[in-house]
Image (cartoon, rainbow, N blue to C red):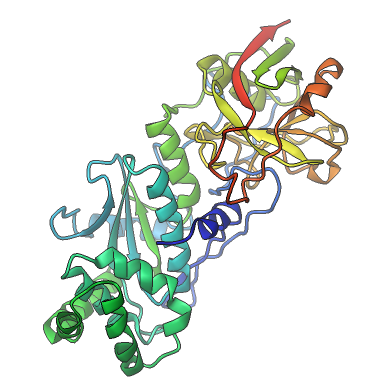
Length: 430
């Protein structure tokens, strides 16, 4: 079992990467340590606020109806070639009836697969009924000399009902065995099987089973011939997905937290003025909204407020001298409402004051339901995050009463006993 400390790191500073059998390796982008949704997805086209109110619904990208990422479009035909889910013979974690299915084609010697395994273990720990993860082998022997034998170790453990115990152990100890020769690996892994409570003699027989090894090499060749060229090769609900860090959390937001499979309807008039009154356990926070410069952000915020999305939600990240962040119903800083929308930063507004209301994101155009309020001037955030409101002067003192929380702390990550909660948000049309 991976330690929670590692899981927190994955959620906070997740790095997209991959192991590839050729030089066309998918690139990755690190998430900065700013107010973030803690996830990434392909950016969408910038929306011009001047035309944003056209149509019945605001412009956004809906995640439940996942659109193929242009970076992975070439791989999408593979989905029609893979074996259907086999509840009897596939290695499955989570609820077999879960609405979100993640196929993981992976190599135990692949460093990037370790990060993916940590991500999925985190997801399964907190949302076990909504997600199932299916592990399938994709050894890359051209770059990993123990790809096959480590896969055989997984199968040998699986023959005794302990596939995922070996799965977790091989990933957790990858740096320890990746530099060994195959013969040294065999000598090393057999006693480790004993430490996992397995029958060592039977494990060794299965580890060296020539027929099973031939099967593993055969299915690997088939998958490589399909066009799987990197690991982890991830398929989420029938779509090849290198950006599972946003699609999975937003799908969870949709299925587990009653999120949305359509873009929000227009519920504001950008020519009118609006005030949001946050009823919190620290006191009332009154915020003047800016629909004229950020109609998308204001409309989404008003829509979600009226829908009750923010009711009972904690300020999950409150850093002294920086920001107070909220908007995730799980409190983990991960979940979105099922859609994302573009940045609105083409204006002269600045985070140069206390009480500025901004949209949290992990990159341009990745806004969802999470927002933050500055607790001190933070002009370094200018240009990267949509500003859509300002706390009125009479409410600024309440910001000092919001309980400080650092979700990077093991003690505070999922302990909300003392966290400030939003009881509800009233929207007033002036």
